[in-house]
Picture 1 (cartoon, helix red, strand yellow):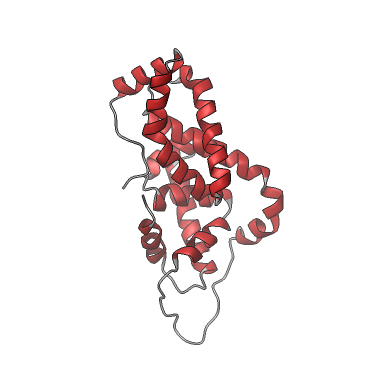
Picture 2: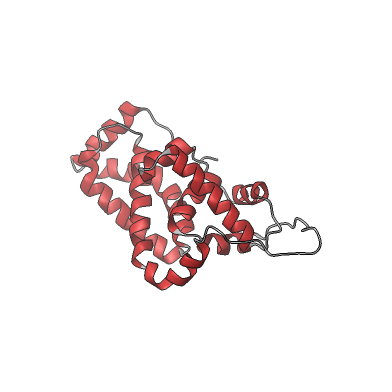
Length: 203
């Protein structure tokens, strides 16, 4: 299934946002129930910690409560919340970036070579846990685009809107992520295989 939240009409989104802005507790509960599950799934994949994801989810909805009056219906309410969640996760990840600087720098080298072998590499089944751990090692930009596209199922134009980047940059980041993951996973898996494995975990 797609990573987007429950589908609704622009008019319904705007009406719900207005009710939330007026302090209607039932409206905000409706907003939370409609979107919390998918936002949590997104956040936990981006930060790789269930406990941290719980805290960040609450912070995202607190921000949404404070800013819901700014919602004008230019995008769906789900996309607006997803953009807010992605930005909040990125802020959190930047805060811990110094602790991961060495890993990030080494993975961000464009010339990273695949392991040399005297025999052809044999494609192997990707262990789901190994893939999740490999994703954790990706630079923030690559990881975010990869999670949104290959795991959550968003289109590149949707990711571009969320992250404030061009569609071409989104495609480039996803491609780079797949190549880096292939290198991390011993070079034995194709980019297509990585995407297929990621889709297995889609909720």
